[in-house]
Image 1: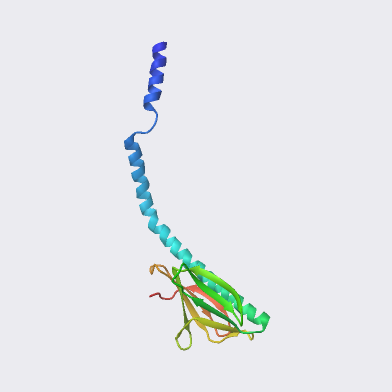
Image 2: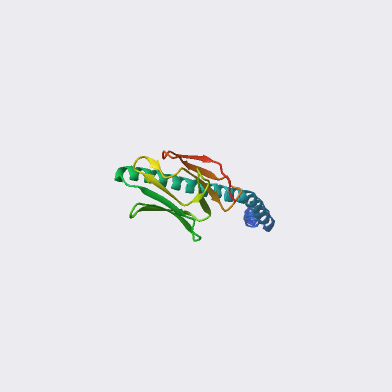
Amino acid sequence: MNVSVNRLIHRRTTSSGFTLIELMVTIAVLAIIVSIAAPNISTQLANQRVKSTAATLTNALKEAKVESIIRRQPITVSFANDSSDTGTINIANTANISSYSYDAKSTIEAINTIDESVVTTITFEPSKRVDAGLTYTICDDDLTIAPRQIMVSAVAIISSQLGGTCE
């Protein structure tokens, strides 16, 4: 009886734990999975940055439109693609009304729909019109990411869609 107990104790102590080879194989499999998933994650993050910047700009434009009607004053929306950690979108009349920020890896470009000139401001009038229709294109540093466009018509209708070109 004593011999069988000793064998049982001996088996438990020698067969518990993982061998070095088992641990190395597990780490290698994990490294392969991470290397496959990493590009997908970075693409998803870049897509999310573009969507977030587009949503922020859309909200700022809609806020300016409503504020111009409520205050019965022209309201201007401007943006700056700062070189720091964030870009800024400002809503103002004679004083600053509100300000939004967006990731600096996203860039905004606005093109006047009439003369194709590049602009950084748009003014909403209390008569529910804008000074000129614009098409905003939101791009990411990663040029493989699909850009988004926000269109503001001459009668201040704001719409968003996938599309545009980034340089």
